[in-house]
Length: 259
DNA sequence: ATGCCAACGCTACGTTGA
Image (tube, rainbow, N blue to C red):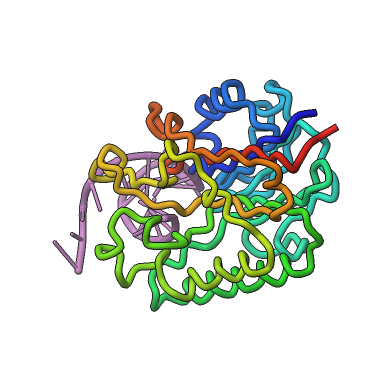
């Protein structure tokens, strides 16, 4: 079988995105889709969206906040909720093994402000993630909304964002540490024509003005990117009616094949 | 400094998001 394509998408409520998600699965048809911010409890999760397009799906969510899922056309093994696999705490991580690759769908805490206790929680959560990655044998893929723009080029205006979350040194250090233990930021191989940003605020016509940030990341074991990799941001999904404020990111891995 | 938009929930406006 040919290379596998993985997508990640913060849908900002899966029930509000049923039609657009159905379109995405049919038109883009990734082998694997990592979803964040489903904002729904497990009992009300709309599994049928995935099943009618030929996907199986695993989800961890609670009412209203957070919520993560992985949908796959291939079998999923060793499903674990939470980055410790303990299924406690906020529903921000779910993992499964697909065709020999450990896949994580991640929704990193926002942080709110640099002097907010939630920011400490964000850094601790990322530190815990690093420990999990160090213990996890390659190959793996970390996909999701990291709520960190790794570099100044990943935001529309670094000056305007000075002092804000998502761009601070400790947050960027946490991402750099993930790269130091063997993961590669797939956007570093992006096609020139792909838009850079993955999130644009709903307000003030930010999308039209391309006032965005790249905060949705796909970090993968280096072996998966050989002999080839393709990366793109699906800006059409952000341009659609009733969009999420995030666009999907799609990565095709030459070093990952199923079946 | 705030609202600008969107989504949620014991349908009404406070909370969260980034």
